Image (cartoon, rainbow over all chains, first blue to last red):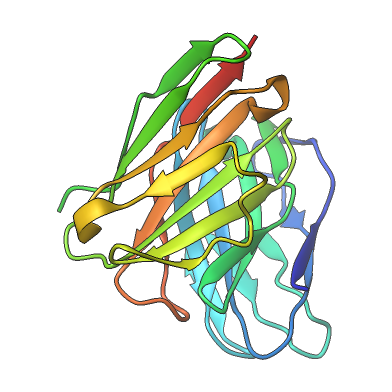
Length: 110
Length: 114
C-alpha cells in the first residue's frame, strides 16, 4: 500500500538557518504530494503541493520538488524564522485519500 | 468562505463512555474525510464520504466506531464504548472532488479517554 517516510525529529535550528526535512514515498500510480503544517494550538494547514513529476510547490519561502525518480518530496527553506516553529507533515494523495508521514517537529530559536 | 469546523475542540471521557464528534465541511464540498493521529504517530485515514455515501471505510479500526453523514452535509463520528487506545486527535477534511484535489482540514478534536 501507499506509505510516506519522513525525516525523524525533533529538529532544532537557529533563526536564519537552512532547513531541509526529508520525505520519501511509496505509491502505485501517480499521487499528488503535499506538505502540511500544524502550528501550536491550531489545525492542519496546507503549506504547498505538487501534482506531477518535476512540479515545484512553494509558499511562504518553503519549497519542495516532486522527484519521481527518487520518490521524494523534500521540504526546504533558505532562512527559517521563529514563527516557523511547528509540526510539518508530508503526505500523498491517491485514490481519494491522503497518507501521511509521522510529522517532524521544528523548533527555531532566536 | 468558512473553513472546516469541528466540535468539540476537546473531550475528556472515561473508558466505556460514548463520545460523538462532529464535522462541518466547507459548503459545496461533497467529499468528507475523517483521520486521526494517535500517540503522536502519523495521521491515519479512517473513512471517506461522497455526499451521504461511504466511499471508503477501510481505515475504521473496529465496530466501536460509527460514522454518519445524513443529508450529505455535516458528519458525526461516534465512538461507543470508548477505550484508552482511542485517545488522540481526530481530524476532519473536505474537498470538492476526490482525486488529486487538496483536502482542507479542520482544527481537530482532541480526545482523551481515561
